[in-house]
Image (cartoon, rainbow, N blue to C red):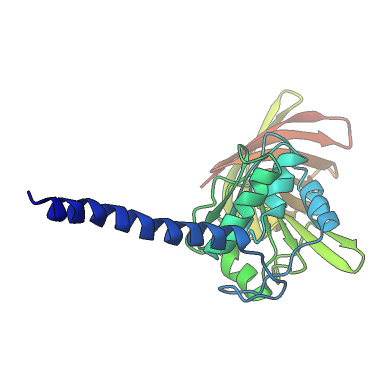
Length: 287
């Protein structure tokens, strides 16, 4: 091959390489130089950072521990996921739609020394799978909270949910905290117990069988328990807390029984204590 042609062939990949280096360097510099601006537009919301004291209170409301997996919906600069990992020892993930913001947040996690426990990924919170979380955090808008609400209510009972500033409309929070004019709302995802249940109670050597009917609106319950033919006792103080259920009723001997238990799918079981000193166990199976 002619020397000049050989030189031309050799020069071609070298030139391509030289042109590639500035492009890559510019891309890296752009990624590293990105700094979010308060009020910048996102897909559905503008970015406004949550103050550190609010972040900490949100995580304390959820009683986050190293056993938890915290997912922050709309991660922004990553501070909630980072604090969950750094201060509370939890595994965490933030889902952020803006790819530059997601990279910026991941760099923040690396700078904080928690990249092994906290990661921020680019994604759409309305498409992403966050069902494995034990704790959900968010700082969105009321309409977005409502859009997410069906997915959240379908999560494992007992999942803890905390929102900065905005609630879930008629799903009343289990706690509301205030910090210097700001509010944070907390919910426990309730089990689904609405319907009719075959109820059995054993105590003092006797067994009773009955029918339990429950009506549910989120964590609030109403219902009846059959005591005899055509006689339904109304439930008192009925309440759901995640997978925990409690209610009371007064039987035909004027004795009040207080029941507590745990819901597991189509079965409930627990214990009761009556005001005459009787104690026992109870179970219920969904019909």
